[in-house]
Length: 328
Image (cartoon, rainbow, N blue to C red; front, side, top):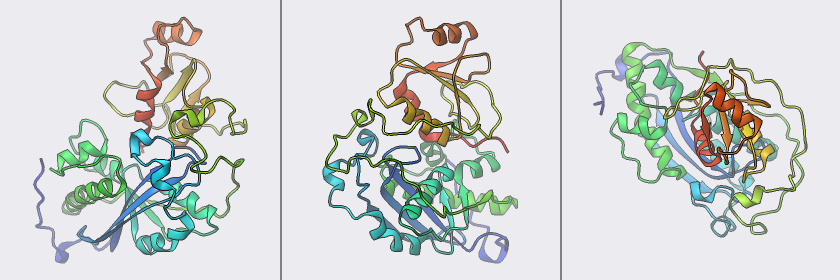
């Protein structure tokens, strides 16, 4: 546990640091381009990371809620929730003029930007700060880059993992000592530009919430996603996946055999997380995902011969939630 040192006061605070932050967490129907927000929370902080207020809302995604076993929000719970356009103004007011702070901020920002684009609007966010990137800048001795590890390092108690309000609270409480540590050391904050989407082209319509059972069966067969050529992964391959550590952007991931989630959707989630979908297994493959590791498919045989790590779909889905940024 790290004890917060408050010697860095307003009088010695770096003038170049932002004047306010919005610590955000969103829970979603999935990780892909067409997935939707089902709940959102914002903790507003002042320049030194002190909490000013907080806000939370459920959001009706107008479709299957996705991984209920993760976020706990069923169709019945979400059916009476407001639609995103109905909370967009309040959400924007909470973000306005502040740096968006999130754990794996690229994901949260992309989901928020897409929701505003669907609503024919834009979120008033110009910069974001990823707490994973900040932890790296500070060289915090974390076993991995999960939120629970960051929280434990600063003695923050996590009560309801994957509940947007509690995750945002935990992150706000862990961000403040991180921010003070950066200020004391004169560390430049890893701020990145947020570029809002200016238009949105939806995929074919999916069944609305209440018309489709929740869970992985929602993504089986009869794919609603059009086949398309994906862009090349922009990040270099950092090497093989190591058990107990997070995935890192640029890793090459191959799939073998049937998956409970539609394969194309799973591959989309992989690409959106900054990973490379590999069509075959080679010595450069970082990870093979298969639900049948004892079968003798060519990919599994090659993975064994190369010593490529193998995980099942459930483990991989969890890993996708905490992908580390590529090395800068």
